Image (cartoon, rainbow, N blue to C red; front, side, top):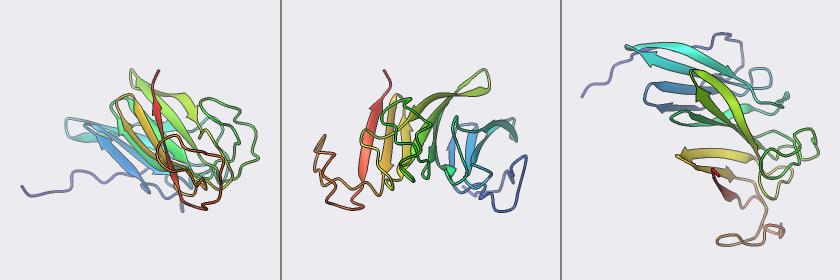
Length: 182
């Protein structure tokens, strides 16, 4: 019943101001840590074998840029990692939209990575159905085939489930989006 420190974990490329460990997630013998100020942001994946932790992955998003804060939030379930970039600026909506349109600053995005044979690869680029500048889409949770993303500064005055997303009369009221793997 007494807790003891098992490891002291640092990034393989430690740099001043990276904010390594600003958000962490653990599932069994896998540990995921975000470093949102490491360049355009990064996520580090560590695994444990026989009580020894070692770095398994260094993950970057497909379109991350300075200020995106990739890794500001992370979630882990088995071989799936969700990484948010709260400052990402694409005006895309839905799954795997146009990542190059940076007309919605701080709208936020979520990246889904999966592990196969110890290798992490991006599976999806996820945006809100009503992407707008400043929404900060990216507080993440995952359970099995369900992905949940909060946008803490979304402005819709909608109530309940699937309300009117276009009525922006409630600044910073926030919203939650639920996605199901198809």
